[in-house]
Length: 394
Image (cartoon, rainbow, N blue to C red; front, side):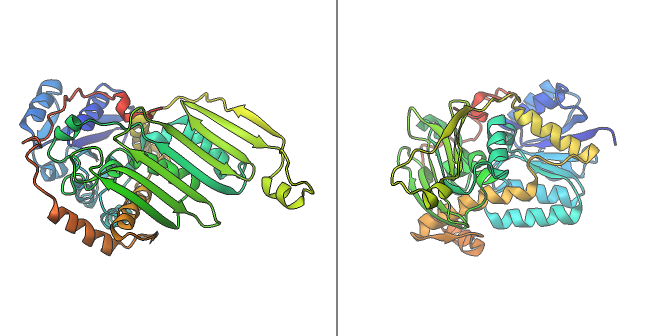
């Protein structure tokens, strides 16, 4: 095989952007051969834009068509594992938009099928291509920051208006999205958080539901995490604060890293703080350190980088930047955060998937009908291009 034929299921905001870029030849070795959507308007757009590409209203027909080697899933969240599993069982490679699903239990099934089917399964975690986050991970994972003490991520620049939530009936609902700011805006951030510092062992979270908007799901969250070895972490986010902040700070006994305003600063200690604390005969000391603005020379390849990497994995065996098996991590933090708030208690990871599924279903069953919601989804303007809302927002 010297070319991968791909079909896109869901050609709304993200799906149409992917379709435009693949069709324009921006991903070497990848060719758009089919699209699928339940919206007649979106299919009409596809017919006009890509007249040579096959169109389907049923993803099952696309999977069985013989026209594709791989499927890109860009539907509402709950359908991600459903469609991915069926595609993989048919022997097709799968690239899923984030998150991999709504519940960790479904994503575990997804990964089991991927392993059994021997197909390439990736997640569209495009922020893993950001050179600042890549450098932070390199420094932390290499041990240059020493023993980790604390990580704090304040990411409150996800501001959304009520009109945003009114734009589609699936938005900001337990039945539609399966959650709010954690599951919609923050999967990338939570993935990067665990990608750099690792998975926590316990979580205590506090979620406010409809604090700033007329919605049923969370729009303001604070997560407190504890890790093996004693490090702690705090993650703060909201869609109801303006102006917002995006600041990731990671402290170790050899210094501190701060990513903010598109820059990475490293306070590098000459000696490990723990050694100084234990050996100094003085009560107050200043440890010599160097403040470094870390040079960032790489370019962020974002969505196109993930698409190219996925294609290369199929054609050349290239290692995935964001393998599907890692899609469970950020989702587990999200599930644990919801479960912690619902039970008003600490939650250990791996999360109790059976209890989470039970309580999520209760929220779905109790969800109120809201007259304010649009009668149909997809009322946002669909430009079919990548915009800065999908990039790192400093």
